[in-house]
Length: 160
Image 1: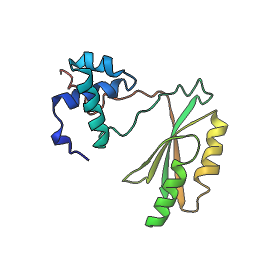
Image 2 (image 1 turned 120 degrees about the vertical axis):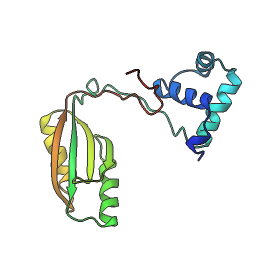
Image 3 (image 1 turned 135 degrees about the horizontal axis):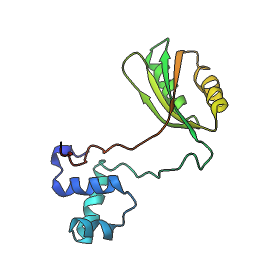
């Protein structure tokens, strides 16, 4: 993987533009940044090959898909062996309804961002897929009112 320090201004502009709109065409991206299309395509390919661009994602409207309720489930373990942690992490991340699974430091061990159909489905999710694991000691669930994407690490600093 190429270290971030080896990225030049053009690489960072490409990454910023792709972070804002991963669907942008090479032609449009090249025009926006004042690059030749071949140079733009080469640079993006090089960023992929270096492992800096690891994929693209589609953003879904979860409510329109029938999953209007989102929550963060905080999970605490009773046993912290490497095998228990890895097994649970793999299981939680693979559970349908989990948008993201975070292994965190602090009082909690995992945060799960989930989307479900309704409050009953949320309750069932916690009981069937989280607390059913023998190493889980405690959970705490927080409803998500709204989700907004952040500026990201390549955003221009705001004027203060």
